[in-house]
Image (cartoon, rainbow, N blue to C red):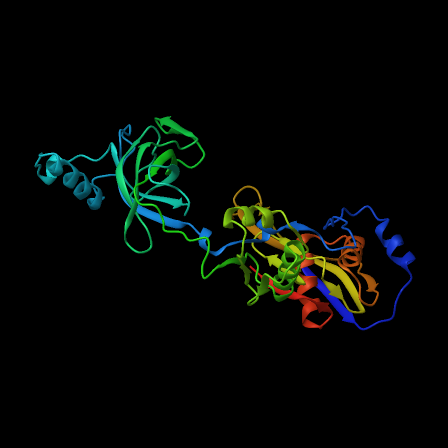
Length: 382
């Protein structure tokens, strides 16, 4: 479908024109959730975190054994080498031709370690096949050291692997549920070296915003100062807020601040995922006066086969099949719709729904609005 778009600066049309267009049977392409006029409130713990609370992403290489002929093939040389190394540590020395790995799979083990996890604490780890194993179902992860970003071993992992699915087949028929090459070992990791974490640095707590914004950081500092009754907090930049610790205990102070209600500032942004046809728009999006003409041109090309028979008896002719292409062009009637000045997100959605646009058409319309300067928002294409 080729979408025709005409964007012209225009005056305001009565709202009745939009209601008449919306009365058509075309299903809405976009649904907007009505919001409140005042700023949306959010807890401080949901929009920011302490600087010291970022955990470590751990990584390790290990082996999963006990598979039912679903492990790596003989072509996966690193699996054979790893299995030989494990057996040599147990006093067994084998030649390469004596090592069979069909019940063994090489895996990468990943997990996230909290900075407040003490020594001996357990956590879940994810096990992912590294070779050509078809399934990790029923396997057992051998003891695997997990290293942090600095190369130090902070934890170990071992335990049964759960894939959350199954696979069965034979003689050309098979049935597989979910992805069998990745599984989890619940509580399979345990801490052997806790992460050093300091709540208070230079007599202050430091809050890091998940979405950096100068306005939001300033509001957080003002709200904390209003709660504590003194100028204890200040916004250092768009992502960091410093809170001085004077007499309060750090843990009690953090618990007191976590439930503070903050009004985060949301940017005017439109996010488009062209692969899936998904469009997300923030409530701060504004549209300048503009006219939108939406129509469609459909071209159908068909190929029909016609059979020609030769004359009867002794003509000597042959039956032939001749393709006959046909082309049909259908143009849909376009609808011109005007948007009033400083239209909000709800106005834009109402107008696009009145046109009966589909998600793919909506993407093209939004991109055209941005090109002509009518879309007052950041356009992000994923």
